[in-house]
Image (tube, rainbow, N blue to C red; front, side):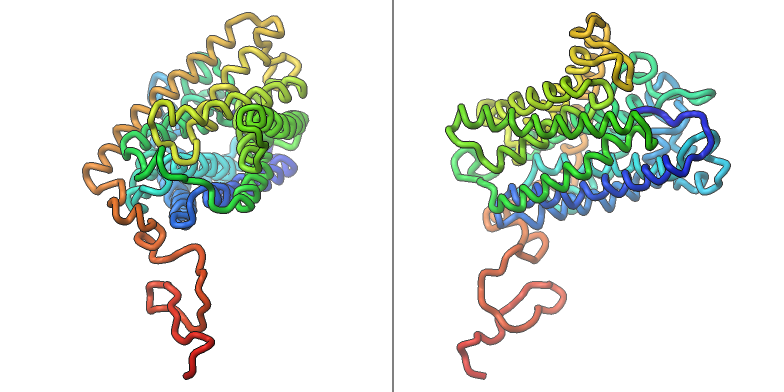
Length: 446
């Protein structure tokens, strides 16, 4: 992601980043709908609440210290920012804090915080149907500080003037325009780690665990695509040619991802499904996230199509290897993030905003090697730290719901609610529990 450049505040850039931040925020309810439709009806509210919970606690943690860890002055070696430099963001209220930035730095801080929100929420998809809500809030709060913030510093914090940023971006030269490593690979590796700690769902591999509401999935996917323009084009940090190019490559990759996924699905299963279309869309957008500023339009089509095919094949790995990634966070986000990050080393063109040629454009293997280092380091770090953190939470407070609650449905047991009421009722609610109860049946006398 490009760093803030030296210039005075620009109203056009500021207006675009305000809009882009709102678009990224929209991705949270979009993800909640997307995930909500993919689970069984007895746990739809729980998975949606995990996204809403992540939005709440990550926003608070990011404000208190997360942004400073990610974008504060480096403490040494490009590994971590100064946790106290911007703690609470109060220092950014003064217009003088903007320095030579084209946008208010406090707006940039919130924009980056919303990236962390989505990344944390993505992790929840790997443990749908079986996680305790309170334990999840504790986990994602600590994960923000121990996993995401350091990685964001490595890859998103560019050195400028006297400010020293992260090592992957500045010393290694990894290209990641909007989050293939910090968002996609990080969430996928973290999701795999937590899923392994919690174990498989009751009935995994035996009972049908089909999506309960495919129109909800399609609606959520559409909102995610819409919000993704803020995610990618917003990372240009300005209303400019760079943002326009990124907007186009994002559009093309999402469309090609649908076609790639459906082609393989049709050949493999004999049907092209709505779930496949939604998943292919997301796979293409995942892969273009790191590469959107590095590819030509044709390169974006190739990237999206390859991601759709590869991710469609990868979602079946959980059955082969026995890990229960409930909503295919590994198959789509980890694998798609790897495709997009490594693909820069192959398909990047110097004519695009990042100005680097990949192997297929005569740039040799150098950039591919840098991308491989970045992807590998983030994958290993996110997996190891997330596994340790999930294990600590599980041992101290219990991360997984008890078997009886999982079988009967976590919505009712954890939240005291159900997503759908299939009974004819007339009446009100019970006390503070919020559960509809039948008081008088319409056919009964008073």
